[in-house]
Image 1: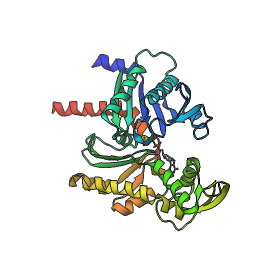
Image 2: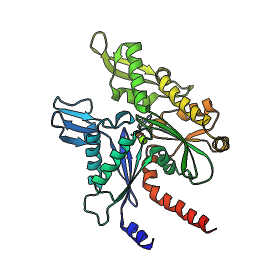
Image 3: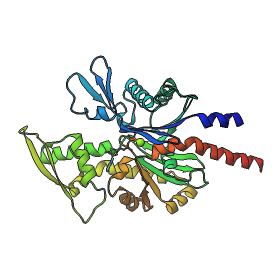
Image 4: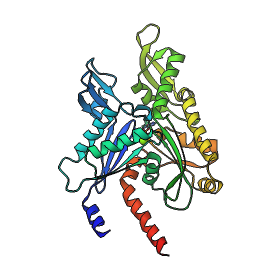
Length: 345
Ligand SMILES: Nc1ncnc2c1ncn2[C@@H]1O[C@H](COP(=O)(O)OP(=O)(O)OP(=O)(O)O)[C@@H](O)[C@H]1O
Ligand SMILES: [Mg+2]
């Protein structure tokens, strides 16, 4: 035990949020050292990596023929394992430039809907890049820790993480997941829904960059007295010529109806599966939302209205998973100490 503590004092603990949109790395004592899009640019054919992260993102949708920018984790599945591994390797090498005395421990937050095979693959790649110990945990558990929810209490807490490709809703009590539901739908589907709407209603083809900007700027999940507008540019589907169009927030809300309803329904379903005692705690404490998708204006209000349970956004929703992953070992230690005390009683 004493030797173990000494060992851990010299070791580096890394928390990693391997997200479909963004990958973040947290080092104990240093904070968040990597926060970059999960994008890799590779040479077509050879698959040689030319850029990773922010550099690669700038190439997304605008690459010349021989280079392709890939989002290897799109939709919450590891669509391209080899490229995912290269990306993880690159980010870790970037933060651990010098050789470490004691190999680092790593806690990696992944969507709970990934398969056992994918989960093991993530674990293996972490060992390959030099981890001494690897723990792969559900992103909503990490999100709850990162949102400073006292998860080891004997009380029910609900966290809803809306990411880019997945939404995960969990009820946690005594440090464990009591109920978890995950759907492969998140902020990316919001963007796609806007693209589809603009194309169908206005015959205008817009890119993902434009639709994401619409969502962030004037998107609002709940009806609001203030109606905002934004001018967008795209290609006319009939003439093929570039054209401008003014869109308002009411229209964006209509476009987002389907994916938003799906998330709200999943929250309701999870509440329905929650044991009554824990549900009573949740009504009192509220639902905590994390993930970049929760930054959509009005989403917390809409969830409150639809479920009758207060709902609020965590502080720094984009960072909750990585912070929680980074703090996981300390938390676990805290819990074990508790158990020691209980065992002595
Ligand atoms: N201000 C904002 N308003 C609305 N959506 C936003 C805002 N900021 C970021 N987003 C959305 O958040 C999503 C990314 O969130 P996040 O980084 O939590 O996802 P991720 O962790 O990479 O994905 P996942 O958890 O599904 O693996 C994107 O869809 C992005 O458009
Ligand atoms: Mg995430």
